[in-house]
Amino acid sequence: MIVTGNYLQVQIDYQPFWEKPPLFFWLQALSMKAFGVNEFSARLINALCGIFTLLLVYRIGRKLFDAWFGLLWAMAMAGTFLPHFFYKSGIIDPVFNLFIFLGVCCFAYALHASAPRKRMLRYALSGVFIGLAILTKGPAALIILVLCGVVYWAADRFRKIISIKDAGVFLAAVCVVSFLWYGVETIAHGPWFVVEFVKYQAHLFTRGEAGHGRPFYFHAVVLLFGCFPASFLALRMLFGAKGATGNRRYFTRWMVILFWVVLVLFSIVKTKTVLYSSLTYFPITYLAVYHLYLVRQGTLPWNKLHTWSLAVFGLLVALAITAFPVVMMHTEWLTPLTKDRFALACLSRPMHWSYAETLIGAGYGALLITSFVLIARKKYTGAFAILFLSTALCLQLFMVDAVPKMELVAGSAPSDFYKSLRGKDCYAHSLFRSYADLFYFQKMPGGNAKGSDSDWLLKGPIDKPAYLVCRIDKAKDYRGKYGLRELKDEYGFVYFRRDPAATGAVDTSAALSTPISAGRSR
Image (cartoon, rainbow, N blue to C red; front, top):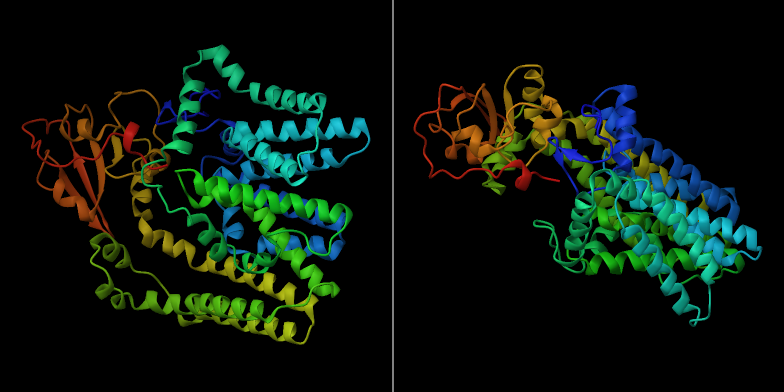
């Protein structure tokens, strides 16, 4: 977008990419204009989204209950595994989910409002947020809200809950906001781009995306263990509000409905990724804190089963984090466990690990035990705070210490190679599923249209040097073929150069990677 000035159409490799609408990419482009094209700018939007989310849940919790509830809800969001990592990424879903959550909350409050003016304003706000969500990732936002409304209507014994006028205000707001891209793009370039986008969304829901097929229970398992400790604490509240009245009961019902709608919907949908159920992070953390609130108030007795489940899984995680640096110092222990040449080659990269790093996991285990002791003594305020804060601290320290090293081990080595080629008159291309070559090489538009076609770069009459990278387990398909000159073999990747003069006979029997238009990873 920044290079071409085309902000209406999302592109990859300067080709139309109809799988996503553009709002999130507009925000990233704005960030990159301010701070440059780099990983920081790509992730900044979600970092700001995370800060806003913490402030939002604190405010909602304080308004519904008290400051303690709001603060603990914010702690739960920061101190739960998947949400903690979620807002440090450069993916679309944190912003998408925030808009949906705001839309659902406004819609729920609109249904509950008595003053006509306030009710219509809330429906309009709900429509604006859902429209923004549709501009961020697609129509799933509207589907989720409508399904939540239908379930609420059914739970209310099918009594009338919304007038035609109010529904019209909501839908009008959705359409007006959505028109900012769907309508403008259609007027400017015709319907093709939007039609392809809608067809792709239908494909995801009905037939699924290759490589993302999972069993029906996939999301349930991911949420149970990925949203520790909040998921363990929310289980007791997943089937309705206990001990609540008035606004608290009403909001809790909506959070339960939101959880089940998202879980069931994306369990049915053919395409399944971890991100699709990420909207449930809001109701899971809320219901966990509501459970703890009732225990702290004495309304609901603490079940010792929670202590044991938290202790067993939490201490296993602490043990794994403690053992991790030790294992990485002795990667030869892993050699008998796998025959994957690529994994073993990546693990051969020199890394500095120390026994001091075991203190992250050991400290986390100690703090968990402290929390369990306080629970046993019924000192719930301190116990629950320590439980979430220790998890947040452990995850943060682990990310700062271990994740950069694991990024190198996991295959980020080609990024430095691509950076070294910036500004040179050449082709840089990955012979495996990746966008790294486009981002780190900072490919410019123009030139030969076949410059991202693996087959042409390997066998065609190239007009300038081509630098190609493949995984070591696929190197046999390229070594000694196509006039390729091997530059180096390093930490799981093999680097080749092909010069324009090398356009003679070729071996067409070798397996080739698919072109970018069909084979890039999303």
